[in-house]
Length: 405
Image 1 (tube, rainbow, N blue to C red):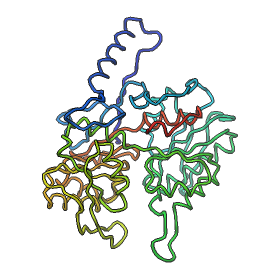
Image 2 (cartoon, rainbow, N blue to C red; image 1 turned 45 degrees about the vertical axis):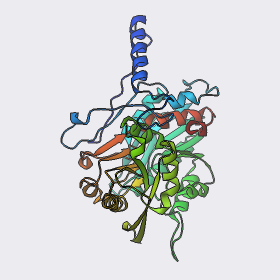
Image 3 (cartoon, helix red, strand yellow; image 1 turned 90 degrees about the vertical axis):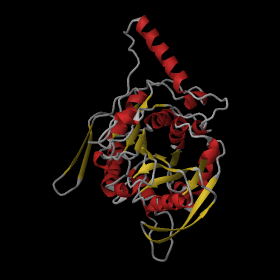
Image 4 (cartoon, helix red, strand yellow; image 1 turned 90 degrees about the horizontal axis):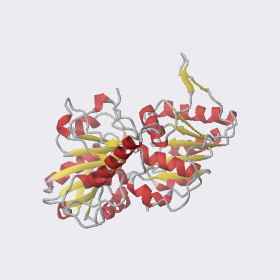
């Protein structure tokens, strides 16, 4: 059973004025309690972050992760600060959300944030494995958003997305946006040796030819993959969610160092470090001898006596990040945190991550984390409000990039 998030709703229009006032007062007190001002502070300052309620880890037993709960349905602070244009009505009946079977919990959270109901859709598999999709409500002339990450099983979920797009196209949808919080095959973005395929380009072609007009994806493995699409692509950066959570940890700036687990992730780690009060940067140099096999060779930078925050876009088998953590401990790091957007968690990732190398493993719910993969150090953060706001802006023809500025 996948983890779920409880999100309280504001009072309805039929609620008494005193109840509304009470709710507003509670929300005001809440904002003061969890907000981060621009004034200097002893902990990390993550500007313009999405606020989450942070639960006491002692309340969780049996290895279940700490799952921060979304705020009431209001714009997160940094989204409010960037609303510089008129976003128009947010009750437009010409927008439709449909969820695939890959991550229904996240889809429901997005719909809740947006104040919409998920569209009715029938998805089933025949005895031979073929996928059947039927929309059970009209989408003619509508702006349709299909919520379906291409996470494991990648090929099943990718094909399901293709069939959903085709169903919408044949039902005369005005615009079709594929919302893929996790974009599979993104690592196959170049040829490293002769006679290799570039599967990322192939998948981009499949989504385009199926009939999608736009793609919305979170933290794609490499920026060059965006150029493989002949349609518009909105790239959502989830680092703000993780930065805000780290700020709640109140780690002293002088004790902090951001670590890239490989040379290829230096740009990502540098951008992350800059947002953490321009923290120092260290780099793990490794040599890869095969797919999903990594060997650490050297460390560039000083981590002795520091709290090391390792940053990557995904954790697959956890070989790279676990070997990097071993090296950091050998070099004198006091604590090691692992942060990533996509928790792929292919075996033996759970064994490596729960072996005691990490103080905490922080991921988001772009990929559903199965209950069997819970372990005490795991924290799952929700990106539902970030994706929901992005969808509203795409629908309203407003700036998306201003969210992250």
